[in-house]
Image (cartoon, rainbow, N blue to C red; front, side):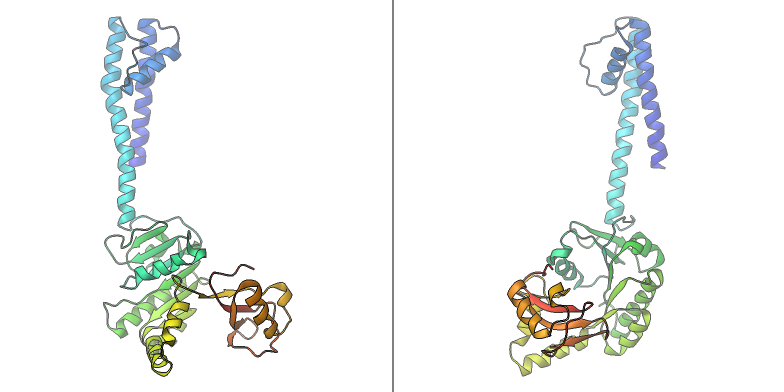
Length: 327
């Protein structure tokens, strides 16, 4: 609708511009058609330099037509363009506009922890400029930040297409604290299934409240599941057994402070060598401490590998480092 209106107004404005140029050139016998076109443009834009001035009745009549219609049409044209930008911004704020970003993270749902999740993502170097798209059943964008986009609605085919799910890298599905534990987990499982049906290969991280829902969430297609209740219970027990250890764990899982947990590819010179060599050289060359190995061959994490474990080409190190190691 707006595009058609702009095209019509643009054609009418150009018509008045050309009409004024030919009219002035005919009645005033101006030195050149370009001078007449210049006068017509200056008159329409209300600049009025006065370097070309009509003196004949026909020339002045042409000037009146150009001023009345040209200025009005130009005003309508600029107002229509401005309204398109305003409407686009309003639609963006209300989550009605489709996003065109790629290789982005999608956060499905909104709760009291969601803003902190976005801040944690932004605290990591590889996420500083990476786009984040929020899909939430809210009337307006809940957080204003650079490269953070909003799509309003539930996790459906329409909202996922607006979030450009086909070009996304990771999806985070968070629980709904407004619902009871059973209903919240059921919603997470349903959202996981919906996302997986539209993107079979995307990596999905899901948050549930009851460990009993873990199997359902896995069957729905979640790659990684965080159980809120179980995690907090385990941390509470560790705090009681080894006082203060939770402070270190909190630091390791937060991107905002201190050292963090990262995954890194093994340097080429470490492939085939024992883990004890990797432990020493990673600390010396990268100031990183290796805690575990993600074995692609065995499809599992090996915590605290034996000293003689031979590092494989497809292995990934899980390390503690002050910043993301670059290999």
